[in-house]
Amino acid sequence: MNQNSTPHKKKEFISKPLKFIVAAASVAGTLGLWGIFSQADMKTATVAATDTALPTVATLVSVNTSISSSSSSAATSNSSLSSLPVVSQQVQSTVTSAPVVTYNQPAPVTSTRSSR
Amino acid sequence: MNTYTFRAMGSQILIAMDTDSTTLNEAGLEAAAWFEEWEQSFSRFRLTSELNELNQHTGQSWQVSSSFWRVLNLALDVEKKTAGLVTPTVLNALEEAGYDISFEEIGHNISSYLDNSFASIGDVKQIELDEKQRTVRLPYGMRLDLGGIVKGWAAQQTMIRLRDAAPVLVDAGGDIAISGLMRNGSPWAIGIDDPLQQGQSLGLVMLAEGGIATSGRDYRRWMKDNRWQHHIIDPRIDRPAETDILSATVIAADVMEAEAWAKAALILGSREAVEKLDQASVLAYLLVREDGSTVETPRFDQYRWTEKWQIQNNLLV
Image (cartoon, rainbow over all chains, first blue to last red; front, side, top):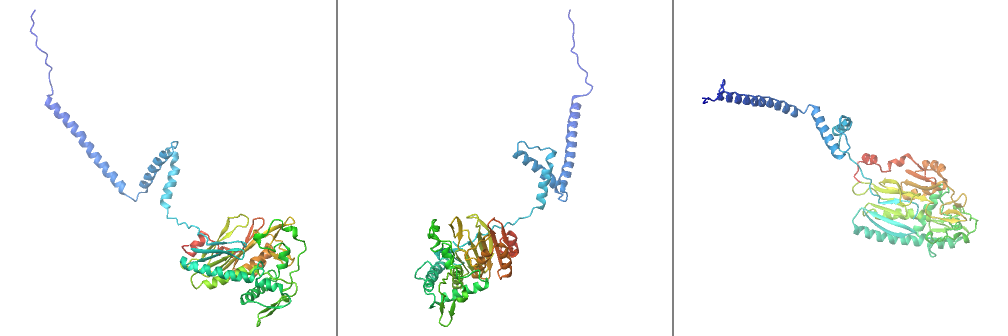
């Protein structure tokens, strides 16, 4: 039997160019929003970092330094919150440290003793 | 700081001058010659010394040199000031205690030729002096020893003779005379040897002028009849002082006064010494007892070097 067969053609409700346009717009929109929000974050972060009146900035810097240095100097050291007292001591010494002048005992020219 | 050392009077002599080494060497050579001359006058271990000649001519008026005259009068002044505790009439007692040869020659078997009797010391009022003729007449049997005063006097004389050339310190066996501040305005740093631990120090004092001396029974001592004897005679008992003090260090206006009061303190013992030294014109003192404890006047802190002293005096030493 000879049958005339015609290939099934899927009906397209949305054309390919339109799909491409929608996809491109979606990607562009996502990237654009990301850029806008990230720029806003950068501005906030910059303002916080340059504001020297905030003592927390200095404390945080010292905390990070202390933890990294203690973990590198002692393998068994714990960088959990329990180590914070050590950090606070370091912050204190940094704030109050001043040049300490030490005097060495002068060398005696001679010494007194019973007659020799 | 340049120093020049030599041996004289049975002791190490040190000259420290705040000057160049050439000037110091010239000064040191001169000082050594002066000490040799004085030793020839005052040594009891040189048979031909002026002292021995005088001691051999008791009962006669004997003319002495001007140096001898000055030192003898100084010794008599010291005897008066210390109420007879430091007297030049101790030679017989010293020899009876075994100190009849230089300390370096004293051997371990000294007790074999000693007896237990101690000679009477004698009264200095019996010494007759004629200032015009510069003669001395000792009563029969009295013999003098000026060793207790002459090292301090020699240190003082040397300091006076050299001080015009540069600031100078003269150390005669631990009796130290100082001319004044060093050229940079600093005082002289002087250690105090620990009599209980050889090579250790009890601290450092900073002296601008005057003198410091230490008298002790930690070094010049020897064994006799299973007892330690030493060279500091107590004229009240005519024998080596029985005292709880091992060494006494005194700071005074001059080294001779420091030396005299250091000896007097050692003879008296710590309890009486504190009372006497507080009344005397000494500037400060440090006594070391046999048990290692120390007694010092509060004024001693004015001289003792500490960081606090350094800050208060604002000096770069």
